[in-house]
Image 1 (spheres, rainbow, N blue to C red):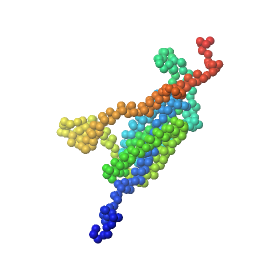
Image 2: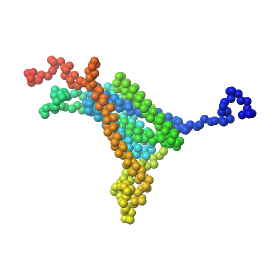
Image 3: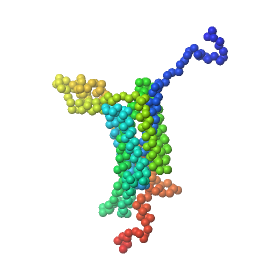
Image 4: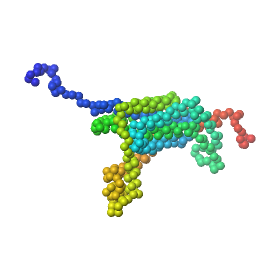
Length: 381
């Protein structure tokens, strides 16, 4: 410092330290990460755009599905979604790889999603489903909500209008969602895993932020449009979002890290469990007491699998009770998208007009039918 002219404007640390800005841990991976985050956010918008108001869509005009049928549709949809997820993971690990599994699933997803705007539009719906079915004339006892039906009275059920098309779309969407759900998270981890735990942590912070942002925009914006504008526009928006998500994901292929399929842990797990339960050592001298049933699949006990693989399966078996304990929670959670909606439709709020759904369509027709045109009964004669 003695050889330099030091003034009050001289930096305290000086330029001689030559401090360089640290290199970003995402250098070279920003485009891949951004493509996954954008695709996932748009996919979540599409997903909640379908499920959020599905009960209202099916329980209102022109479908008028019974409350039980309208609530069953999203429950079947969610059930198929979660049942397909393990198969989607196996398909990626054992056959197609994560990229192509996600891409094919998004195509399937989009095919099912495109059915909903057509079902919501009056002209295209008639072409797909035919004319709306009339309600069967019911005996007056069928509208008695407080008592039981007499044994000689039969209430004719009305089959769900456009049910085949609606369920076809839901199943296609569920198959796509399940496979995407099981692969998009590990595929994102593949892009940053070699950059260390800090890169993985930061990526998944943004990943779950994008999921929540997609849900917020969908539940706050798309759901509002469906309820206050119309369902046709409200279903076009999710379909467009999913189409953009598929396009972004396909364009990101050039920057993604694509790992080939190298075998599934599910395949090994079933082989190990089968070997432990049904197999046995080929040599009699290897017959000896085992600490647990699965240890019979180890090489040291006459099995065919290394100890590391068997220990992984044993660790998975210990976690299973935790997942089983979550079943009651999810059973209650999914009532928010079904039973809660139906209950809110029948709330009686003082000072407001009665909800249109509180009145059965057959009642409306019979009450508004002119007396001169009513069919006389035996008592009238």
